[in-house]
Amino acid sequence: MTTHTVPTAPIAGQKPGTSGLRKKTPVFMGAHYLENFVQAIFDVVGAEGKTFVLGGDGRYFNDRAAQVILRMAAANGAARVIVGQGAILSTPAASHLIRSHRTDGGIILSASHNPGGPTEDFGIKFNMPNGGPAPESVTEAMYLRTTQMTGYRILDAQDIELASVGRVMLGAMVVDVVDPVADYAALMESLFDFPAIARLFAGGFRMRMDSMCAVTGPYAVEILERRLGAAAGTVINAVPLPDFGGMHPDPNPTWAKALMDEMLGPDAPDFGAASDGDGDRNMVVGAGVYVSPSDSLAVLAANAHLAPGYAAGLKGVARSMPTSAAVDRVAQRLGIACYETPTGWKFFGNLLDAGLATLCGEESFGTGSDHVREKDGLWAVLLWLNILAVRGQSAAQILAEHWAEYGRNYYSRHDFEAIPTDKADAMMAVLRGSLLDLEGMELEGLSVAAADDFAYTDPVDGSVSKAQGVRILFADGSRIVLRLSGTGTEGATLRLYLERYAPGPDGLDLDPQAALAPIIRAAHRLAQIEAFTGRVAPDVIT
Ligand code: G1P
Ligand code: ZN
Figure 1 (spheres, rainbow, N blue to C red):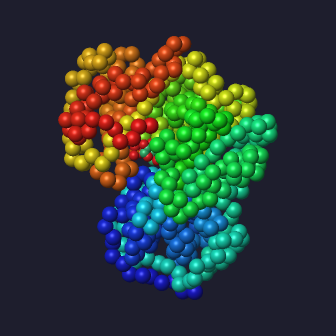
Figure 2: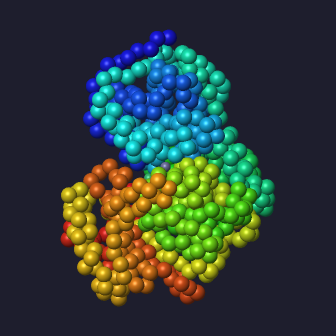
Figure 3: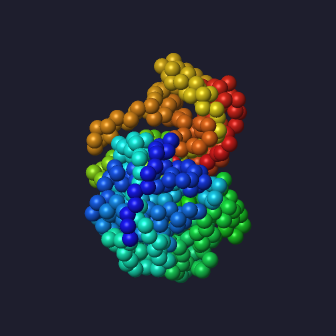
């Protein structure tokens, strides 16, 4: 087998965002596109003599891309690649393999919760030896490299067999094809009280897990049905498909509607959950009760000690700024620190590495802990199951008791999608310019106590992130946050986050949109959303 250098020119626009490089699948399949970016990765992190993990969420082109990356890793001198069988690995499972095998990092193929297929989305990202996504300094260096590319190295070889577990050679490089589920399932078994959860299922507890035809199917079947004894068929949409069966694998009430209908309908199972394309996001829902991600984080923090992996208590918790302050109240009660970070999982990495936080979460259906360096959908589901099993209560009871004890942070996110970018930018600029004038303003029966543009200083490395979102705080503790999405693909997406605190014991049973109505009206007036964007109502409400 010989190594080839294929001459190429730089390809414009290969700029990775916080979740790696994401483009439409045909773009990735275009001549040299994938290859150029992979070469940039290897040029920046170095491949000679190194060991990497490789896998993806199984979407269209995942298998082809994996073969190309393996040939390029071999040509660039890598010593060994650990690849999931069939080139499959969920994002949290990849993070775990990177860490547990003390590798030099890993390449994950996914566009997360975005649809897959020949005309849908594809993505690639590099994770560091700590198992977490590459920081901006590294992705920037990769981008710079793509602009200088003159050629990429690839081995002249046929596809290798990834369908069965075992060791094969690719040139001088070792390829270890591993069961994508085994190590991850063992990690979960080390963290949670599997016998208690198994007893729960044996007692007739019914669950519905919607894997949305994405990567968690095999993980959920192995863990829930085989190891924990949940009834066969508990996991639905359990076979990962290249196009996710046409589903939009984003676990929220809009896209996991069938699950929501079942859980809120008659004869609902006791507990329901869904996860996204690559398995890092989760939604949990009890019989008759939706659990918002912010509330989920708070309940998990308050009860984590019931799981063996967290029996010693939490070192601290962290949430993204727009996530509700429900978890702050739990941290206060526990006497532990609560960190408020900008949006995006990467900001949790330093806190987890430094042992400052154990649990972290975002309002966008992401929850996780220091067991890996990615958010982890099934982990969250299993922690909930562990808590349900030990407390012997329903999710609805646990939530009601939580609110009675801590009060309730009514919460909702309104997304306004595909706004012309100039209009969205103008709106934010005017809002930012008016922050000083807002203080003391009265509207909708609310009084503005403070307004700012969120800035964050990382407590570990001292780095400063500015302009992370406008916060408007009212005297009664209610809050409005506005920011523009960093992951949208079409125009700008305005995210409007709304929060109101009800101390209880009364007024805990309102519909969130009704409870938040005055705050929603105040937000529209303060930000002049209609004047700037022409929109009066959001496209998506979560
Ligand atoms: C969105 C979510 C954010 C999450 C990110 C990646 O980013 O809001 O919490 O970390 O996707 O999954 P946004 O589009 O808001 O920038
Ligand atoms: Zn994801």
